[in-house]
Length: 174
Image (cartoon, rainbow, N blue to C red; front, top):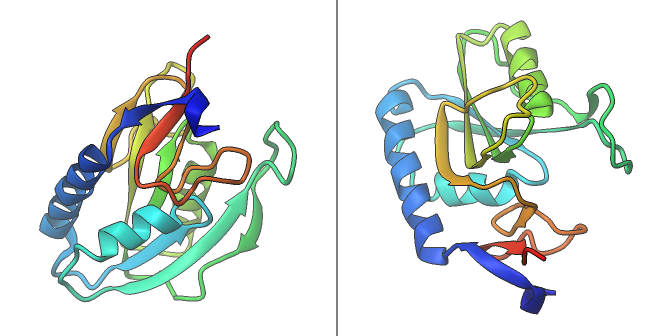
């Protein structure tokens, strides 16, 4: 499968993006003891790589929300797991792998606001460039911009595989 793919962002480019994002996040949140929410499953790798670059106190939790539930077309947001940490009065940082149309991520951010979070920000490793954003145009912190292609690696999957790759790939254009 990888032989039929091409590198979109090298391992060095990804590492530099995480370094830059961590510095930007640190500048904003280092004194606020934020709640960091990992969006499962795609946000697992970006969350781990960012946390390793933070040197300030924070609380870590996760959310698992989906619109697909085994289908290829999204429906309403379905919660598999909501955060156990109280969000009221807290600064919250939600970390995910990619911002595509933004519907699921916007739903997670809205949930955090409704729980009484003081501020809600989001960080994504990848922003996909296209004109189909439906609910969230930009993340507060973005690592990399990619063309409108199916990408995988660094948390993003290809048929439930390859999330673990340290490089971002896309299938070759035909």
